[in-house]
Structures are given as C-alpha cells and as structure tokens.
Length: 331
Image (tube, rainbow, N blue to C red; front, top):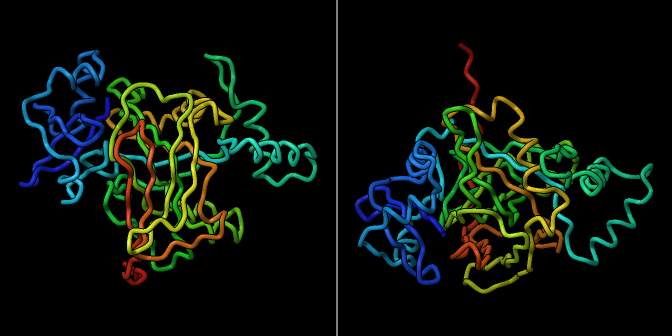
C-alpha cells in the first residue's frame, strides 16, 4: 500500500491511498495526517495498512491535479518541526558489479586506505550481522529538523553560500517513536537527500557542512518491508523539461553493505532518538550521483527520481536563496 499526504483545495490536510498505478488518491477518512494514523495504529496495536484500508471513504481525487496544484505534502511530518529528526548514513551501498569489483581491489591494501575507504571496508566485513546481533557502526550524519523537508514538486533551495546543489537518490525510512520509547517504522519513501558535493570534496571534514541542506521525501510512503532489490532512475531535466542526464540506481539490502536492522540499531541505540512522539526520517545512502559524471545542476533545472514500486516520481526544481547572511546581535 502507498500512503500519501496532501492538502485539499481549501487547505485542509488529508491522507489517502494511491490507486490505479498512482493516478488516483483514495481518501482516508477520520485522519488528517499520517502521524495521527500512526498514533492510532500504535494505540490499537494494529498495522497502518489495516487501519488505512478500514477508513477508506468514497472520495477519489486525481493525483496529477493535486501535484500540479502544489498541494503535495511529505508522506510523514510532525506538527512541531523541532520534533522531527532528519539524519542519514553513508558508505552503505555496493554500487554496480564493475564498480564493486574495482572497489574490492582498491581496499585490499589496508595501510593505504583513506578513512572513507576504511569505513566502507568495515561495512563490507561487518555490516550484515546475524539477526539479533549488532554489526559494525556505519557513517552517520545529521541533516536538520522537519523544517528542511520538502514535498514533491516543491523547490529545493540551496543556500547563497553553497558551492553546489546536487541530488542524492536514496531510500528513506520513516519512524514515529511510541509512548514507551519504541521506534515504530511506518515504511519507506523515495528521497532526494540533496548535498553540496563541491564543499565536501574540499575536505572530508566538511561533510557535516555539506549535509546541512534541505531535502525532499515522497510523494508516497510504501508501507511494510523494504524490497530486497530496489531499482529506479535518477534524472536531471533542463529548464525546458528535456532529460540532460539520467542513470539507473539501486538500493535494498541486496545492494547494500549493511542490513536495515543494523542501520536502525546504531541510530536508535541513543536515548535521544527514542523520545516518545518524535518523528525520524533516516536516509540510507546511495551509489549514484550526477556530480560523479561531471554534471553541475543549474537553478531552474529539475531533479527527478523515479522508482516504480514507490508510485509517482519525486520531482523538485533547484533554486538559490537570496537571503543575506544573519547578523549577530549582542544582548
């Protein structure tokens, strides 16, 4: 089941189930948000799919009309954006078969490895432990709170001081923390983690700076488990809408050096991330970037991430903020 959040023409929030190959939104009655549906599922010890299916009403809307009107919302959010953590893990994907083979050859000489390559090798060797046990820690980063999360068809705005604005096509897992502190995974969504790769390449210690950017998630939330093999297409469209770069990308545990359970363990082992009521959006990483092919995306061009299993593509135009740097006031 694919769950979607959106606004009606009058501005009221609604949720619905995507049907007819993503062309129609079947409205779920009695819940104004995915968060409210999740809280009811937790309280009633029911699955989201069961609860949503039981609440389907008679209203069916056209997805394209909703999307083109700019009424899409991220598939999960929190009423107070400070209670939504946006985080991620990197160096988690194996890449293509040829690239993987080259990577294995490159990591054979441990003494000459960079820290990044050492981390990648650690994941290969210990990122998929036996069920119920913890494996090696992944690379981890913080992106921001709920205020940075954009919906499909919204602009991704890079700061005026940014050196680059590039896509990162990924799968994100979405969670709500239950009243007893238990992380409850709702499902998975397409994400454009969006980063400043030019800044990061200056020095790997600038990774944290490069990640403090907006991101996009959605349009839909895939309920249930992540398929072991996820395959999609990442595209850059110019201002006229023509594709000027595209490349397939893969995700899912078959294409990763870590299990989802291991990534979850090392995120939620911190009590800070088990605060009841909080929302978490956690990106799982990627092996496909347009910047690796020398592409620099220009303002006005559009990122498009298309994965059939997740419904309609995630599309966002690149923009640049015009706000001046803040002035610090002494009190």
